Length: 297
Image 1 (cartoon, one colour):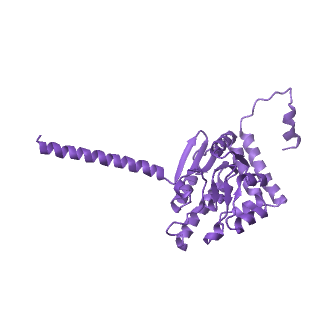
Image 2: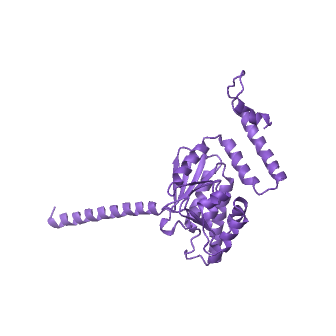
């Protein structure tokens, strides 16, 4: 091989290595830039909003991917997780809808994004398993709505919640006002909605009942995963009935709520009657076992 050919071959190999390295770097970067990360550990699935440089602002692409992932997790015939954790990367949950998207002022394109929002909230409401939000940093606008769409909210005690929609030419459209009025009271809902820049800390929302558990800042995800793993140990059919009861009865009057409870009671009872009977001790009765049977439940 001549010197010229050797040089040409060396240049070709160098260029090939450079291209391979660039491809690998692009692939890694693409993975890092994915707007939604999915992890499964045991029976717990974690969905992580992954746009930390934008405080996990929810773009159309992120919402589309989130809606698709929730659709897959709840698809009939597939093994559903025992529990789901929703969180955000980079020390914050979500700053809400991405108002910097080029199509923010285009009503027809905002309608597309709105459709994805509604699909996400509907999927969370219909999910046959408990959903836990792990909140750090900010949960604003659509981020707050996403957190409150979950069954349980675990938050760093200094996490901040707010509804800045009126200041950006919008109103909340994902149920946050309804959830806040129901869970924390009209006063806090009015503060967050009407007072510009109002932010409410997680420890205050915990006292009011909108956040179920607070932990030192930075510990929300660990605590949420531990809680989800404990919850996921329950019987799937009973968990499905339990979350449906929780989500469906809160806005009803007592008579309607009791009707909903009756329906899920029979659903759970019929499921239990099909399960193999557990061994019993015919000669003893533990005092702790008398509560449920004593009330005829």
